[in-house]
Length: 129
Image 1: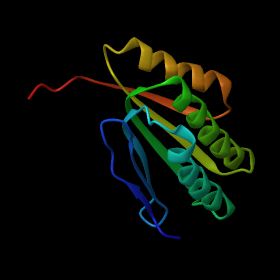
Image 2 (image 1 turned 90 degrees about the vertical axis):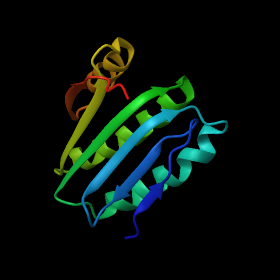
Image 3 (image 1 turned 180 degrees about the vertical axis):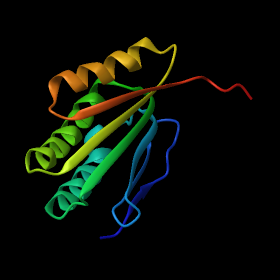
Image 4 (image 1 turned 45 degrees about the vertical axis):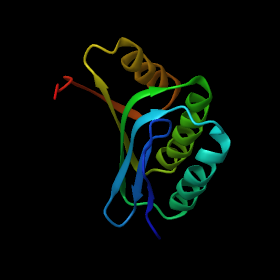
């Protein structure tokens, strides 16, 4: 299965889904002009992956911001992962958020409450350049 590697922009997240390397990561900001167009290939890749997943799947979310339209697509992504978990696979979400970003922290808690997936909440400090 080919890896999915989408370079992030100021409007769209960087996405690396690589089954062979067992690396699943979404990072950056998500406010694409056409949310369905952006996320359709991501969801398609994940559905294909779900047909023959790795024994353990850890998805790292390192989002700085996402809009409401993106939150619905992220939920759809989580629902695919929840299906894997329901089928007996080991699935874990690492939800990274800046320690002073209550909105992003709360978003992770909200997703965790809605889903039957294990969420690890991981705070980090902003590193100034």
